[in-house]
Length: 185
Length: 175
Image (cartoon, rainbow over all chains, first blue to last red; front, side, top):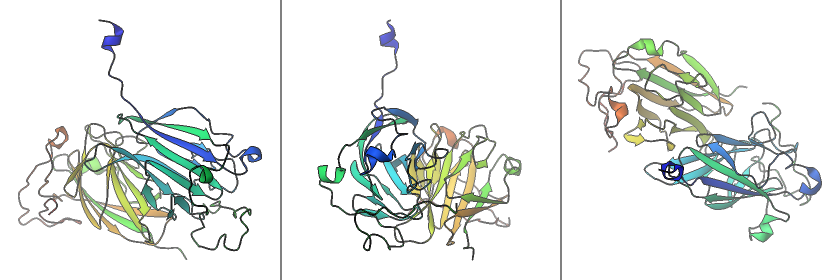
């Protein structure tokens, strides 16, 4: 028998594709630690953290306005379902997270729709799930968008506000959000 | 002023191994808002020495329901070959369910009752562990799996035995 015949049947792998955009990305360097167009394979039980702290986050944004841990994403299965899903949890005490039009406060979590827009501050992340069979691993892939994803995908404008609700109505659209850091932690 | 922590009152029982397997468990454990891991691995926050327990068997994840100021918890099965019985549901790898105020959990022969006492702190939560000499769950309505060999499907009534902390009497699956 050939090695081809002996080989295990290949499983497809669930992939989370994340297309990112920030209006200051050309000069800000916030995505410099993200490896674009690279499929990274992760254990299915990993809680993937996004934020500013490279010691605790799998994916880091080089930006002091980003919380040490901004949000987390994990794979799970609904009870008695064969479909793998992702859920996202806001880990920032200061900044809310918009998942499409749903606003998440600190520690709120929701299932990620197969295609959705995640926003915090000026960050736009278009998250798209590619279904796969493997229960052992999943993959992530990042793509950098040269232009705003809100225009491209016809998402309504608007930015997430801090949980306290005292943001933006008094700020001009170009103003930077206040420091999002959980410095006390 | 420091806000009161959410407390998980966790009662544990193993029908055949005796209390020795729980000897390393502290009576009180304060944990941050990351998922609390239960398993055989040294990295597990609640480490139990059972041969059929996976290195990471399950996690208890704190989160907040939309519109609620209090912590809620979900339980996720992390064992590839085992499973976890939660309030009448048999969870397999990566399946998760939200916990309610009182929860009956069984895995690898261990019976566990988790009672959630709400607090307003969002920084951390506390687990208080009690080892029970008496069974906590009297009837498991779960599918047979290779992991349930040492969990009696139906235990005799306690009779004159004193109920242990967290003891919930004869428990049945969901109605």
